[in-house]
Image (tube, rainbow, N blue to C red; front, side):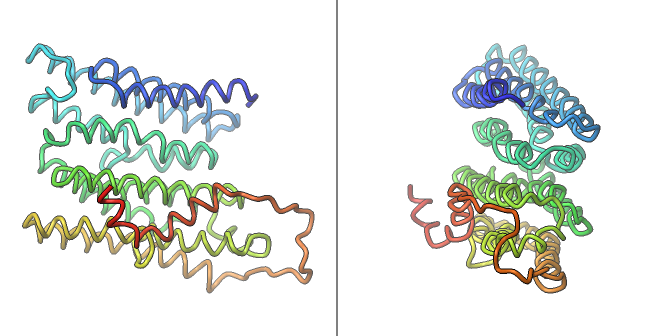
Length: 344
């Protein structure tokens, strides 16, 4: 893709998210979501491959259906209340809006498009889809979180954590693994959103940091399968090791960054007298922990490192990737800074 076109599409992504974040009117928020959807489709199809075309088509149809449902629910609400303000949703339009936003985010059981779309696009576009494209819908959900139906959010959150762990167990394709990881992490965010919006936002920020670190590391190593990570060990040993640690951070193991949101969400649920919900959530998340540990074990212990006889890297010139290094560092060592970040 030529640079001017790429610049236009990336600026459109930024403008769409900014319009949604700054809007107080439902029509403007919907327009921002539409700009976001239309701007990423050319990025998906920049490699003219049938899988990329199929992924872009699935993404467009799903997002168009969700956008239509958002417009329908807000129009019904305006008909009932005479207002277009974001905080003025009533019960029935709010439930329809919640389902539409969760379809946009890829929460289970509305998640079927997410693994297939991520599998068919490049790692750089997958990074945008898994991080930047979630910001606008999640912000709308946070703004209306006091109106959410508690039973609906708990049901969808538990289902997402279950599907996120169960779907990732048999996968070897990293992009599908990251799709199911995204579904599971968003399930944690949705469960706590009704109880504590600040904690949900904190969890979402950490999710973006860890997911971005993982995608950027995979893009540097040009890796799309689990077996390729071990093959990249002779070229980039430090990056391969940090990728494994980021994977364990996504699993939520202490003392890594990913442990902080799970610990704080569990403590908040216990504080809200939802001990049974906290227990079920932790029990279901063991599925995700199992497949992360299994993948790490396979990569580090059972696959051959393919160490070359020469100490020099053949036909490669090592480049500096400072942004990837910063994101990997943040994805690993933010746990001690958690109290400070929550106070800020």
